Structure formats: structure tokens, C-alpha cells
Image (cartoon, rainbow, N blue to C red; front, side, top):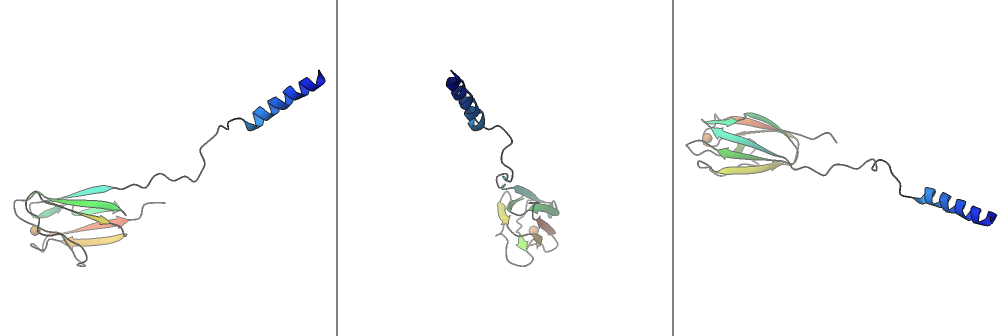
Amino acid sequence: MKTKLFLILLAVIFLVACGPKAGPTPAGTLPPAQSSEAKVSIANFAFDPVALTVTTGTTVTWTNNDTVAHNIAGDDGSWGSNSLATGDTYSFTFTKSGTFSYHCGVHPSMKATITVVTPYP
Ligand SMILES: [Cu+2]
């Protein structure tokens, strides 16, 4: 009889020690990487917004909502679009942080900037 009680006790201890563990999810898990998007409108010979801040990895899409053709020309010459007719779009993904000034190659007075920042880790 004592042996039976001992075995039951042993079984209870085993179940408590090895049962499913409840608790918070492991620390240190990061949310999935986010791919962001932002838009710039071209209208009335101006970029809107004229200054835009995005995080690294953001794809910016420009849409020409003007009645004349424009283009996007990075001031450093490393990026830019072909001529955009009314309704045309151009997308560029900013992978590095920094301030990227650009202008319209057709109308050099049209100037704007994209500021790219690294999100908080
Ligand atoms: Cu233009």
C-alpha cells in the first residue's frame, strides 16, 4: 500500500515538472522586417511633399499629376527617372540613410529632398 502511494506521488511530481509550460514568449524576438512605401505627387511644377523623411528600405513612388512632362533627377546623378508623362510613375527604394536631394531635369527650379533614416533597432 505504501508503494502504491509512493508511485502516485512520483507520477504527480513528474506531471507537474514536465507539464506544458505557460509564460511569456521568448524575449529577443524581433517583429518581421517591414517594407514601407511613400508617395510624392508632382503637380503645378512642384514636388509634394517637397521634403519627405522615410526609413531605410522605403520605396518612394512619384506620380506626375501635372499636365506637362517632368522627371526625377538625383542631384548626385546616381538615381533618377526617365521622362514622366501625365499619370506616369517612378519608384525608387532608398536602402541607405542620408539626405537625397533631387530636382526635375526639365525644370531645374523644381527641387526637393528625401531624408532617409535608419529605424530604431
Ligand atoms: Cu519638371
